[in-house]
Length: 186
Image 1 (tube, rainbow, N blue to C red):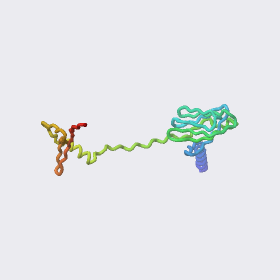
Image 2 (image 1 turned 60 degrees about the vertical axis):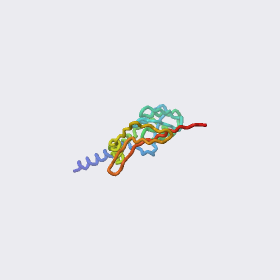
Image 3 (image 1 turned 90 degrees about the horizontal axis):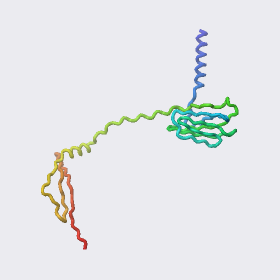
Image 4 (image 1 turned 90 degrees about the vertical axis):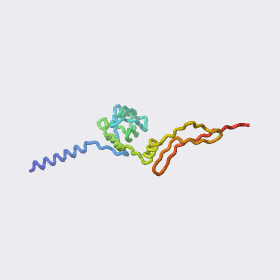
């Protein structure tokens, strides 16, 4: 019985210790403090490509490559802010120089993976509204009017019937109108 209790206590302590070692992803508004040291490089790694990085001071050399940002202090006692943008979010850091190399952050990988893009809604095939159906039937079922010896009269408006579509209650007529006027300028 004592062994069982001891085993439970030890495993509980191990779980707590493991949990405390896990990185906690900062909220989008959180500022992460980064300790750097002169003549040393700190790497910030992200789970998606970095689009831009900007620091408030030239006392730090800032470079970005793919999904990493490299930070190297160039002046003792400097401190500044650093903003890093990826496709999905912005990160804020406070850069400080520590005198003890053992207290510096060599690499930080606390950015969560990019959120999965929202699933695209299933696009249903567009159903033909009643007006489209009626128009399609009208165009397919219209009778073409054959014109023989048709010519436009001079100085008059002529109306030419091109197609006729009959329904039980309505007659649709497709026609063209032309004017052949002769103007004289005095």
